Length: 350
Ligand code: IPM
Ligand code: MN
Image: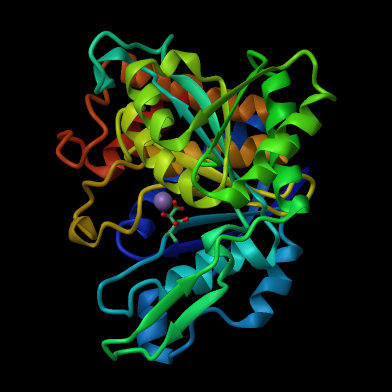
């Protein structure tokens, strides 16, 4: 029987609660589809850091390279310096495993979840391809005269031809498999360096004459996402703008409760996570919506080539949302985290 080794990082806050349901769903799918999963759990996150002083040991990255996938809950806790563990664990996995695509599907399953008047599932169905290893996240920067009135703070926006091109190419390929429409989102009218995106997009685009090219500056792009989301099929965008754009995307899908992302290096081990954070104030209450983690599990299955299993999850979620058995994606939906997981399991058994 086929056997996958999956690294699991439950992490902080609501991470462990939502991942527990995602794992149950994956197990259920594995039984139906005839494969096995071996889970390899890692304790890294706030509790581990506070009791040991360790963020993420270097040796773990070597172990992760030997896995079939990585499944992560959420990292972040107000008891630890802002961003320390996010950079070491989430950033560490993205950068050290060179997961250069952050894939964020934005799909509305049921009209009543839409925050936009008159927009339904036919209007909100696009994918954001966020570059995932460069830009302001690359880590070049620092302080001069820190803590003084003359303080200078610098963080460099880095783009390389290699980094831009592989993101753009991935996006063209994805658009080709969908509605053949690709929008480049940037701010080249103000940020001169972003011209590298404009040129790369055009040059690579010559190899994809069947894909329609579109462009929007990021400020206009957010406006169009709200006014006319139906105009988008695939969006390709740099790391920082992509981070912002995809929280808006999550809101269009009905909320952070369902949004997921795949941190991908095609052909290599990749990492899957809900896009919501650790939400400390909801932790331990069993009220967080696990559909983000379950959607991440769906992306994980696609990456493993288990498309049938992924489709089953999507159908199950869609059915439960359309029939309002899962009435909303927020913590006050009236459903416990566990109960939403139970509904999915029941649906998958039918
Ligand atoms: C995300 C998150 C991360 C990011 C944080 C946790 C560093 O917001 O995955 O979108 O900024 O990329
Ligand atoms: Mn984000």
